[in-house]
Length: 411
Ligand SMILES: Cc1ncc(COP(=O)(O)O)c(C=O)c1O
Image (cartoon, rainbow, N blue to C red; front, top):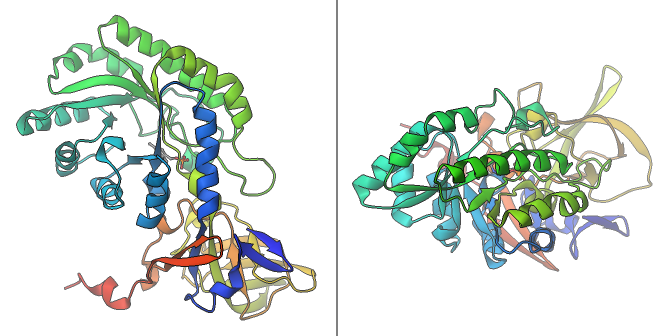
């Protein structure tokens, strides 16, 4: 997104033009940005002989957006059977699917086995036993990696840290070592690798370097114990530039320090990026309903809320707020809130923004990841439209929900 003649543009379209056609609030995504981000990743990982990029659907899983990933050779990292169904629906190949998550249900495992996914990322010994039992009953074979918790600090928000002591994810090396015989006795699933995912919105290569070295050491131990390990999944987590204070994830450092150890390992390398691909490819467009002044502060009340974009309320996330049309450049301090009846329903506190008026539109920037995919019907608000921008074309990729749809299953 960039300004041209005072109009905020997405690719070749002034976003304000879209407000005449679509119902505020709505999400808009840039196809070019998605493809550019995929190419950055491919460029980094193509230095390896064997790599597989599994896009983490939880970041955003609209079918049209998935289709762009699939057309660009990207597989899927999923955490539910329905995410596998989405990927297949978007014409993805189940053989490209890695199934992560701490709570895989029996019916979800059955579905994954029936379509033949690439691998399970197992998060407990009991889960391995469960998959083996189900595979036996279904006369199927499956491959799996064990997600380990390397206990490295990813230096990110504590609610999106996943690889330190006390997190619910993965298992410890001790647990694996205490269950070697049991793991060897599982006949219908084969242990082929280790997996880690240490957090999200990580900016430094260092936690990857530390975590991967720990995992590589443990892979040697597992090999010595007779397991045929050929895969290392290094998770996702590559951060983007939300607030202008960084350049996003340090891929230069990653290429210099991490890629060589991955190459030397001769393993098949998997990675599961979500935010990096889609995060800065999307904006949420919203109309200003009211501007009020209380306690000496100016409050902008938008028609978008935490029901559309929850990350500010959940994680104190920072997102730029940009008027779709710039006026005379005068800036004021505003707090920007939504209509939902929660004190946390804010998009910004005491933020300097170009002066705006009631009826103007703003774009909340960099909301492509964990935006629409985390939206809810809280306050009986409807899921909003999603629009894809491709050059000078805008394409509706999700209709707005109808009130009848949100009550349809209620008795
Ligand atoms: C197991 C796993 N893999 C990949 C991701 C994607 O993370 P990110 O969007 O930060 O790349 C997540 C997100 O939390 C995850 O839990």
